[in-house]
Length: 87
Image 1: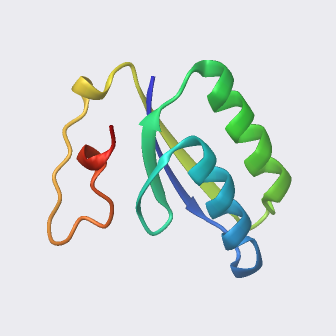
Image 2: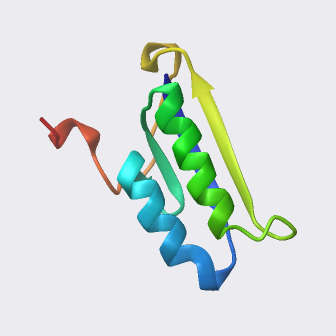
């Protein structure tokens, strides 16, 4: 499934959240990631993020699509990380 993940975590946890998300998804903008994940990998990602988060003040939004083709993406301005450069 195709996933877009957005997080808003406390300053002390941002670095750790970034590292976890980069292991699973492609970084596209500050605190925004996207990519294909199996259900098992998505479950692992969520478990790792829950260990980092303060659930009283942090939030993670995960948008799931059956396939990338069901999503339309429009970028205004500079795209920080172009996914078409990956092999």
